Image (tube, rainbow, N blue to C red; front, side, top):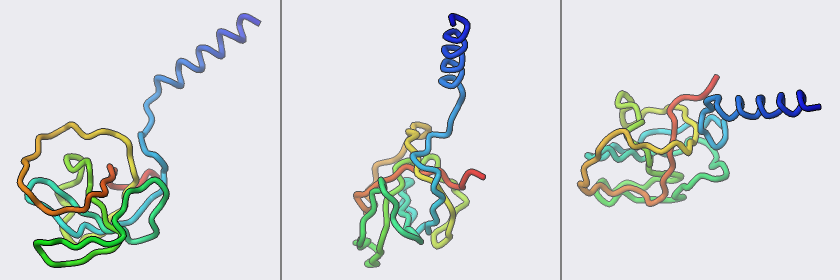
Length: 125
């Protein structure tokens, strides 16, 4: 009996140490980069349906470009966003809870939607 309890604690301890991706759901989504701000701001327009737990502006107008978009959000972890993705390009991504503290951003104003999500570009295989 004692051996069984020790084995259970060992299994629990190992499962707590193994690295896991910090995605809320492993739902692969598709979006298009519709705006690259001057200080790393990124605005994404969803190509499909909005999934639960996402903060999305159903409608948003960029006051500088005078363009309107539906189902958009601001990337809240822009330091993790790949620089090779250009405006107008579509890409796949997942939602994450992983904080982004890897870079310093300037504070110049660029209009973006208030709704923000952290994302990981690409989808797990």
